Structure formats: C-alpha cells, structure tokens
Image 1 (cartoon, rainbow, N blue to C red):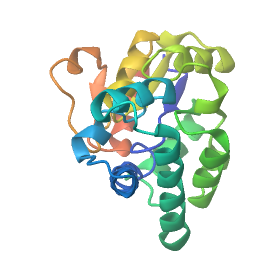
Image 2: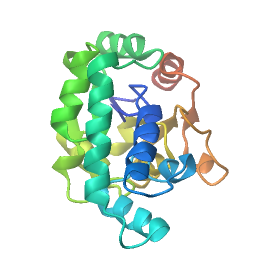
Image 3: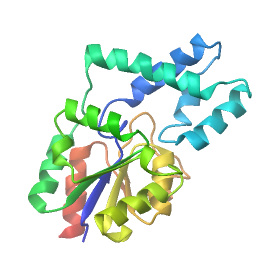
Image 4: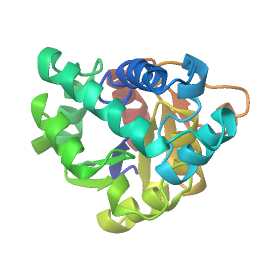
Length: 218
C-alpha cells in the first residue's frame, strides 16, 4: 500500500522550469557566458554542490556560480511578482484525492523553504501538504538520495511505501536510489533510456497519477 506521495516542486507542481531555463540563460549572458537550454536541463533539481561544479566544467573556473545564481533569482522574482505562477495540470485533483484517501502528501525540493512556502501559498496549495523537505534542510541534495531518505524518516514511513513524483532525471535518480517508487511526470524532457528502468511509472499529467495509485492500493 502506498502511504505517502512525495512531490518535487519545480516543473512538477509548478510550471517554473521554463522560467528557470529562461532566467539562467539571461543571467549567464549578463555575465558574459553563452549558456544554452541543454546546459540548464543538465542542472534541473541539482543541488548547489553538484550544479556549481557542473557549470564550472562547462564554462571554466571564472564562472561565478553564486553571482549568476543570485542574479537569476532576482530576475525570476521580478517576473513572478508581475505575472504570478502557474500550477501544473492535475495538481489540485491529485492533492484532493490524497486527502480524501488518507495518503500523506509532502514536498521534496531543491528550492529553499522560504521560496517553497511563498510559491505554494501563492497558488493555494501549501495547506494541502503535510510536510516539506527543502534544499536548505540537507547538506547534500539531489541527485544524491539523502533528501528523500530524510523525507521518509520525517514521515515515519518505509521508502517502499512512498511514491515520488519527479520531472527530471536528477530527481528520479535521487528518489530511486533512496528506495522509493518513482513516477516521472515529464516537463521539459521525456525519460531517457537510462532513466526509464528506474521508474515505477510515467504519467503525462498529475491527475493521471490517481489511477496509478488506485491500481496499486486496490
């Protein structure tokens, strides 16, 4: 029986990955670096420890990750303040189903808690969630498994009784290594041949996860 569903946030609950891609590229350009969409795809859900090294290998040691990231956050915050955030299809339906079914719902994201809280409150779903495990709460984030291990410990559940929902390869790897059942809900890319074997399932939108849970729990 599945007793909890653990959500990634960016690109999974919220349509923010497209914004992250846009503003990483714009911020890097402002610092003189030719960042392209495929470079941003490579760091989706990746914690700073790994993302910084990855980008320095691409652009050299003079790539100031902290400054570029900070500028990216400012650009993205300004956009969100003007335009708001968009929920991914089926989010409310899935969260309501989990509440009605007595299944816990948690968030496991590389984003820090203050921004996670702000984002999820802005779209009216923060209070539908039981717990939050954010990037600033763990020493080593995704794709390492520790953030999902911590999430299961906080929920008091065996990883095998939890379903992780992810849109990125780094998130899938993190949850799979931690021992959870992983469902990918693709956003900017479909599961690759090396990621597909790690998946319990793949759904085109969050509302489709409901049927998968019903099949598992009978």
